[in-house]
Amino acid sequence: MSAGQVVLVHDWLTGMRGGERVLESLCEMLPGADVLTLLHHRGSVSARIERHRIRTSLVQRLPFAGSSHRRYLPLFPFAIEQLDLDGYDLVVSTSHCAAKSVVPPGRARHLCYCHTPMRYAWDQFEAYFGPARVGRMASRRLYRPLLARLARWDRATAHRVDRFVANSGHVAARIRRYYRRDATVVHPPVDTVFFHPAPVVPEPHVLVVSALVPYKRIDIAIAACERLGMPLRVVGDGPEREGLERQAGPGATFLGRLSDDTVRDEYRRATAVMLPGEEDFGIVPLEAQACGRPVVALGRGGALETIRDGETGVLYPEPTTTALAEALRRATALRWDPARIRAHAERFSHERHVDRMRAVIDETMAAPPGTRW
Image 1 (cartoon, rainbow, N blue to C red):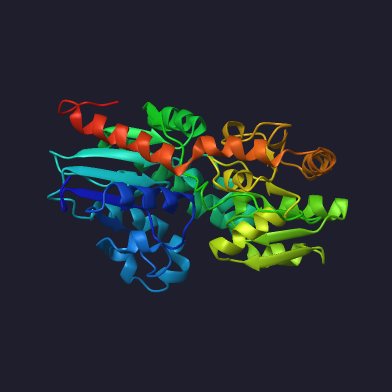
Image 2: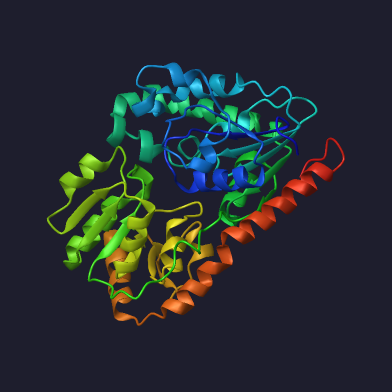
């Protein structure tokens, strides 16, 4: 398609995580597309994304939006619906919050790559806005009715999407449950060229690479490592960092955000990489496996699609310190084959993702007007 006919809509551009990797691959496939987003921190995403014309919403101009944009969550529905999509023939949204609810022009096709239905509105309210987070009164009287209203809006706007693409079978099931729509599964891209093994001897520590937010359950990782006396290295940043550092003992090292080269080195040197929370898909386990390292993960959600128990990692049944500690004991006792682990990760390569997304976009555009999947 020619420039100006395609627009990519993303929730916000504040860092390079799994969702931004998908957006980056779409920018590669659709080099003439514009990018619309609620908020953009210049320099926070890849050069490939920032080469596109990026337009933002009214949230960009609000005080402290750069550091605390989630405080404006009640405004997101209004802000996303005010984005002007006139003149576009194809709208591709990449959404875990509000992007899927843009209002496309009548003639346009809207394809939504859904990372998850809005998790804090549907099934993770307690993790974000429960009494332990915001206080009992605020949780019950302020946040619960607000998030209930957002959930109703999220469901009511699902009809604005012509076709849903889910990042995993787990998310496809959530789309069916909350939006009552089917979804095509296309796994996110993993850079198996950049992430590859190196001839280094793993060191006796485990690694977490994660945003430091409630549902990631880094607290369990800290507690399990302390129980075993196992050193822990944590890569990433987020609103939970200060509290997690207070919880952690001397065996835990918080490294903050690191460059991709340094993260790759951390993967290669770790005995194992942990995924202690339930993920909708999870790029980190596959990056670690592409480097030949096993992953210890909660056996729920996307991990069931990306990790083979006993072959590329260890799955444990429940999000408790005891279960994770036992899984870590098992992981350190097993002998792992880095080549076999990497071969599994290659099934999720960038090239496979791009080929599949091209086919989905072509099929969507070739269908008769009004086609819904």
